[in-house]
Length: 307
Ligand SMILES: Cc1ncc(COP(=O)(O)OP(=O)(O)O)c(N)n1
Ligand SMILES: Cc1ncsc1CCOP(=O)(O)O
Ligand SMILES: [Mg+2]
Image (cartoon, rainbow, N blue to C red; front, side, top):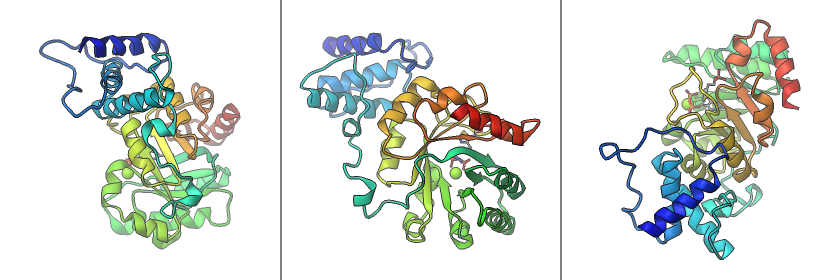
């Protein structure tokens, strides 16, 4: 175990200043780190990579995926180098083929979806279409099926013959019926949605991810875009992981650069420039638009800052 600990310490030391670590509670005998050596790990690098990741504040599922990535990277390079960080699709065993060669790929969408407004109702969607926002999502939450249908119908009508691409959050069946451009689903939503139906209907599919394990899982579906977040704290949604921060976002964007990417969560005028520099082609915001004194002016400013 001491060799593994030594390798893990080298990784942590090499990446201390990369903004990949997020604060985690101090591990103590009564609060021990998750065990990462209890499965059939194939080599020291896998265990060391996972151990380092746990101590850098990655959740257990991400640490396991990272451990395997460290192992593949060391094998591919013919040796271990703590200064590197796994960031290539083959390190994470992502699909080897391109979208064009994958019969199960979802319909393509632009690589750069630009400023992406996630809006609470169809009236907000209309305002965004009028402001010529390139991408908008209707994220209307309700248990009332007729209200949902009406909201989706209005939002689709507003975006028809416009410059705006409209994604519908969650309600994939109604989105197909209404002829929306695309659907956005979270990881839990994938379990219950009929993805074949969405694909066959030709709708684009965006998937949420919150870390390495979810990105690797999302890749199996070859969605139209992958959303990554929350980058910063947000009070609009309970997130399954801590805010990921810019350091991780930059690594995620490098790894998934063959997909159209969307960054989301707590992004505002103060951060959108740095977020865009990660390489994502789109930045999704809620409050930066809906809580702005002048939403149109905010959109213009946010778009300028994204350049
Ligand atoms: C662009 C974008 N990214 C992430 C989400 C969140 O989706 P999900 O995890 O399914 O959560 P809900 O939005 O359904 O509460 C999103 N909507 N859009
Ligand atoms: C829907 C959603 N999914 C991840 S973060 C988020 C909300 C983002 O809202 P804001 O941009 O106001 O932080
Ligand atoms: Mg959802």
